[in-house]
Every structure is written in C-alpha cells, then in structure tokens.
Length: 244
Image 1: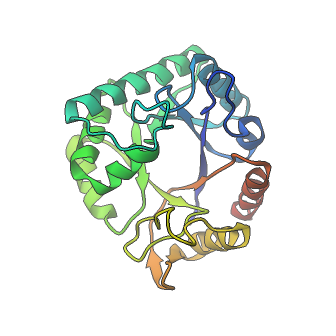
Image 2 (image 1 turned 120 degrees about the vertical axis):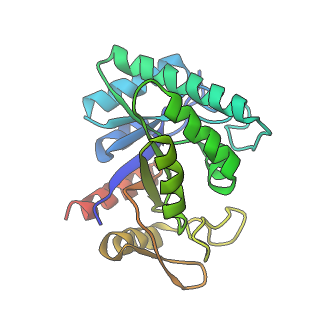
C-alpha cells in the first residue's frame, strides 16, 4: 500500500506555539492547516503556507468547531446549517490565502471533536459533505479509514465529492475499526509499536487491534504527529520506510 504522510500544522496562535512545523514539513506530503477556529491566526496561516510552498507539500484545510479556548477538542451542538457555514468560512479563508501564494487548496480534514463527530454521527458527516459539495471548486474530504468505507463512498458519490481515507501511525485501533479512546490504556503507541503498525499497514493493509485481531483497512494517507522533537524524528523514520 502506497501512502502519503499528512500532519496537522499551523496550530499556533499569537504568542502561543504549537508543534514544530518547520521541522516536520520536509518529511510530509500533505499539510492540514488550521483555519483560525481551534488554532492558527492569519500570520500563522500565511507562514505555514509559505513553508508548504518551500517544500512542495500539498495544502489542505483543517477546520474545527469554533472553540479556540478548548482547542477544538470539545463537541458542540451545532445545526447542519451552522456546520455548513463555519466549514465554508474556514475553507474559504485558507483557500484565499493559499491562492495569494500561488497554491491550490486540495482537500479538507476536519479537526479534533469535529472529526470524531463526523465519523460517529451521520448527520454531522452529511453537513460536512454538503459544505464541501457546495464549495465553488472541487475539494476532497479526508476521513478515517474504517470498515464502513463503502458506506462513506456511497454518501460522497451522492453529492459528487471525492474521499481520501486516513490511517493513523501512532493510534491503537479498537476491534470495531475506530480509534481506541485516548482515555484507555494503550490508546497511543510508543515509537516501536508505531513503526511496526506503519510497516503492517504498508505491507499488508491491516492493523492489529487492541484485542490482537487483524483488521483490514483501505487507506490513502497516514496521519503523523510532530508536536515534539521525538515525534519529528519518528516521522523521518516513517518517511524512510515508505520510501523503500
């Protein structure tokens, strides 16, 4: 399985720094750039786009709930109309700033609680898909690769949008194909388990779940995290394995 590497970037805000974007960017293929609602600000967005251009990295929008204080990790009871509006607002912001630098916005990956709600709640997912379908140019939606991949494809086809399916390098999978909740022991892999999972996904298109079961997944892209130097070094090792 040939995978691209994607990473959540541009999440700093004002004088607060999140992540090691400059160190991560040379090793990835896709930059999921925060759009100001959970992290990021206009200058951070601009600088992150500049980094992506320097390293020839594909640009994607990383919109979240309007929850800057909670870093977008808290679910919000929003109507479909509200989700469509704040999705399009954030997509348009990063799309416009990308255009200024001669870059093309290729895809959207929701952030945090919005991503989790998209995967768990069909109504939230439908609103997100509708927001992308209404956007005046084609944009691909990135969502988690799960056993429901065919259902998600059908939903997207009805609206005429394309999907990319995402696997996770450092997260343990539950037996139902969802990510094991962070509140549970073993939810986040150490470096050794992470590299082993990456090799398993690439070689066999499977992951080993928390119970030791083998689960088949179809993925186009692999999510990595680079918010500390150990994570950056791990991304470099993952890139090396994918390049073999």
